[in-house]
Amino acid sequence: MSEFYAKLCDIKKHAATTKHKKSSEPYSSSSRQKKLQYSAATESSCGRSEAALCLFICEHTAFLTADHLTELCKKQFMDSKSAAGMRMHRRKCTKIIVNVLSPHFVDLLVADIGDLKIQPDNRRGYRYFDH
Image (cartoon, rainbow, N blue to C red; front, side, top):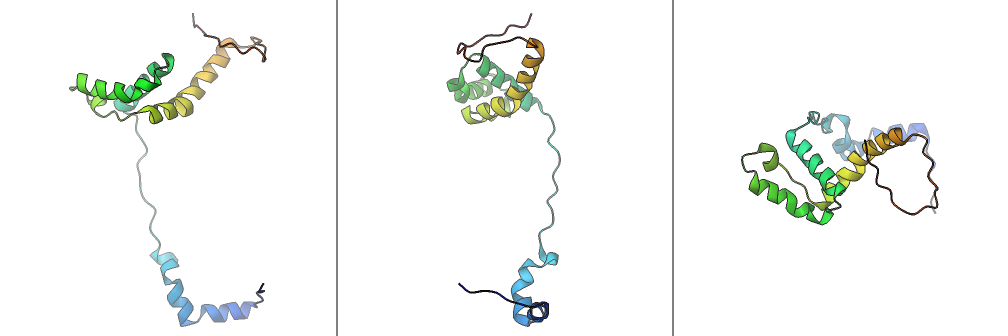
């Protein structure tokens, strides 16, 4: 195993060499790529339509139909801009439900149920109805 010992003057001397300057040129701050500009995502009718379809699929546990449902909507509602712009299959539908819709509805459910005590060893599922 080799060890590295250097003094500050050795490092400065090396930085002044032409070989180092030539090798470090691509990494200099002046040649770095500028930050890309992007606009914030705006809420679109297509996004609302995809979210509504995700809720429908989740409520009826119809995940296998997610691939075909968006294609059916595109064909049947050809005059609709939101239907024409939908791009959603099972994977995207699952990610929307898990990462976007689920946290929202869990918070609402906890607020509605309040201090209702449910035994943790009870393995049955409960269907909650909002009156």
